[in-house]
Image (cartoon, rainbow, N blue to C red; front, side):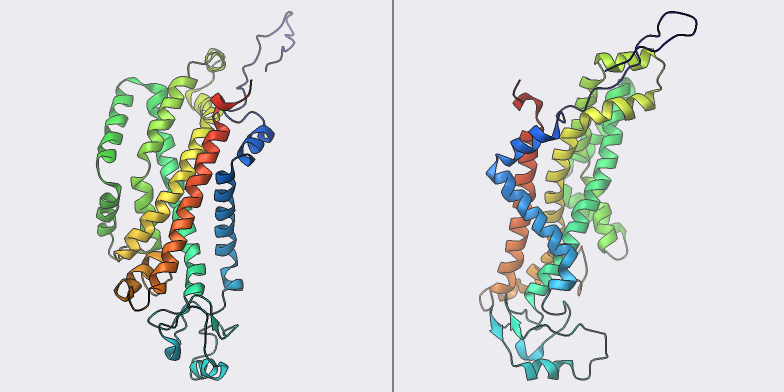
Length: 330
């Protein structure tokens, strides 16, 4: 943990303080084994991995162009085929390079009311969901960790002030607050939606980080660092925050699921990503009036949202159990 250094004037220096490994992070091997023993957590991890691969490989694996409208195949049910000649006719007169040529004449999940392939739009919609979910959570973590660390470390008036601000944000329904923030912008889009979700999603993180900092700052290694003359910034960044990583990782994973669900809701209301960009929320909105005549237009995007949010939630729960020091075998 610390080493004695030779003093040129004789004797030894005091041991230099070194922060212990972050709490809940002792040995990645035991943590990984504990995570692997949870079947639900593994299922969630598989879902998340599939989502990431789908988002990255969407241009390669999608059978049709996400925006191509096949007028001869509007509201086609799943596993429909249209003659290859009709697909070729659809592309006649279209400027070269505007749409990617179809790889097949099969529509595995059917088409929507505009004749667009649902499977291809779901694959591209995974990109939107992942980008919004991750970037919004990064913004929330940056804000929440900063406020929580400052409030917990310095205490006093600053702690009271920052926590009252946190309580004020926490009192507002997050979706309504996000709608209010989006209303400030002239035109909603991808950038505005993850900024809005990040601004409203930091309160829980701030509370958790504050509680962790209040506990860790009383440890002996923090007192030793302070006695050695370490600055407040160095103590927070090098000694306290590394020992608060476990709950931040867990809350961040769960927050991504919430952001994906919120993005779908805002897009459904027309306040998120704008058409013709494929978004699962937009696909639900476009098919809500056809739920009786063409239910697949709503069912498949809804299932994509369901399994994605469930996967992140299960993974977050598994990480919480694996990183919780109280569950470690002594």
